[in-house]
Length: 422
Image (cartoon, rainbow, N blue to C red; front, side, top):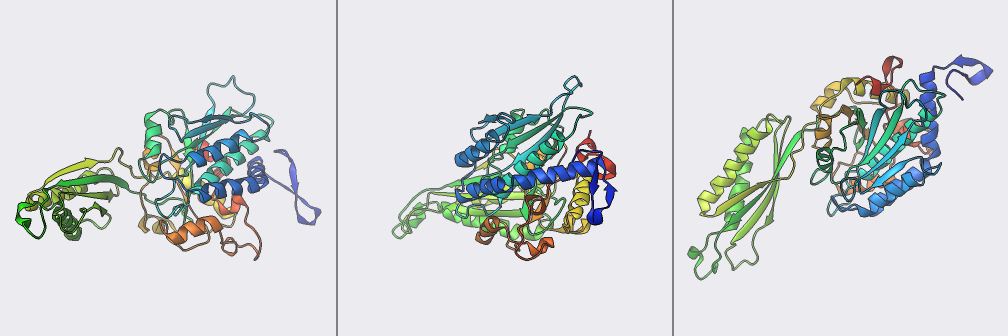
């Protein structure tokens, strides 16, 4: 069916369907046609979890996915784009290249896992959603006889969200420079057009003491483990004076080698989170004072090393999230309220840094499980994808990728959502 035609309805009657609605239907058809391949893509990533910057198998699965799309060569794929496990796949609409500049639409895929518990944040589903949305938009645009302006659909494979910040590396390398808008979606316990993901700074804290026999002459030693324990307790006490939205959490990574040796070295890793980059340095200063106080109390020396990148808070884009909700409701998706969005729990993501350089949206979609992210139960849920009944479908009916993945194609008032930001 071409835009401008009438779509038959039940009872043999005809109803006028807008060009915009026909494009949405075409996008849905393209995604449904690719459902089996998209599911296989997600399962392949889930079955071999890989840590940040080491996602070689996932990188290969995704690049081959776009390289094998028909017709051959329709996607220009650049493996190892700026990073060893990043990629770029690009499709351009035919004709109209005399226009000043194509509109660049970006879709982001994540695919790194967590140590020990695999895809407990569902990044295999993020990869599937990004690929599916890109295929849908491409298919919708191909159905048009002509476009008012040329469009490029760009899929960026962005590794290392869980540790390191691959998107920040790509920002610094210029990968986002010409994008006009970016889209991605994250699995969760609810459907939300936006969650206030917060700014994050991580540190590695190292204490250096002096080894000694713990029974014969402990007074000759300087106990680096005591310094680590004091630092941990200092921060636990500090929490009473922290703002409600601030978060401090960490682990003792190294606490010594043997009980009868006074530990000469200890190491902690801590994350600090605050709603904005403005508040984050204030929290960081308080925490670093706790680390230094522990060194002073034990006679140890301390080294505090910040992470390579800070994660920025995600900026809201109301035009995009309203368009997302409007289209999601047409698919039967129930969203949490705006009040719940801003008061609910959230984490941190390097998409926050992206939102400071390109307009974008980072919604959350329910996958049919109340398991919490970063748990073994969520790893299992990310593979099973139950929740058919929650989508309002009859028992035994498989949801389409469009229904189970929150995919945004167009916006309110008959305008493309990606045009709203230009």
